[in-house]
Length: 210
Image 1 (cartoon, rainbow, N blue to C red):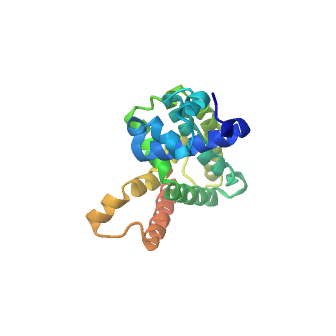
Image 2 (image 1 turned 90 degrees about the vertical axis):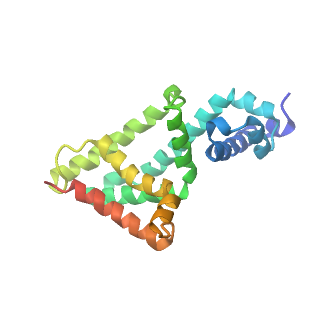
Image 3 (image 1 turned 135 degrees about the vertical axis):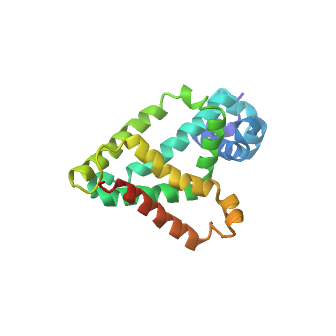
């Protein structure tokens, strides 16, 4: 039997569960996360989780889908089609770097899912669909740059975006070990600003015609 809170506001209850699950999965990974802890974080009965999401597997996939949907929806708001190709690339790199900086749980979720060889994402009917329009957008920016003579020819949009993501991802996901190894506070504002400009220069440098 569902509790009174869920009956009054099921959408609110589902969102509480989602946020609790996001925290639990990003902190402890899929294997270490516990449904009991998710229920405790959300302030709901554990049965509510199974009622709304079915299983721990299904809940983890839902959290992953929401995480991808969030970043893709934010990227869509950049309106890159209305920018010149070089400005569009600058904005994309800037957004990607700052998004990963401000949403570390996204990196942790992806790290964990890769340990499972994308076992959960492979079951998703949504994730591939939400990436197809984004791939087309990357292709549009690159082709416009090529036609204007500011970008090299035949850049693969998938390889391009993987590189954009990686120059932000590696730095931020390894920031504490890198800071220790090199004896620098790489998470300070000045270092982060310097890194972002470096990322933009690296990507635009690659794109210049050869």
